[in-house]
Image (cartoon, rainbow, N blue to C red):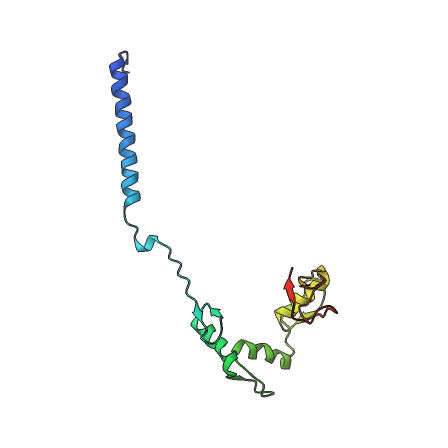
Length: 160
């Protein structure tokens, strides 16, 4: 074991430690300043597609094309059982459940089932008492957006 009795040795030792720390910091800075490789960078590009007939933006070109059918009235998907046509395939599939009687959306609090998730959500409010829609003229709240208020002309709805 080495005996460190002189002040000069202590100074030398602390200078060596400081030099080691400076070297580590310098290495960290060099690593930090290296250009990032593309595989190390997670790029999040959010592109939106704008409708040329209204102010609607869509997250994909396909969704925009479907939206634009609402302006043109074009309905490419026709029900083979009743000849009703729809602008989107998903709407046709939902409609076909009315013919098959399929009700995949089941209430967890009672034995009711529904063909559409949105109807289940509305039904669930009968159990929770939630009333997210408010008349902007009288502040009365409703569980369904379409419920009427005597003071409203049905155009003044907001969400609470």
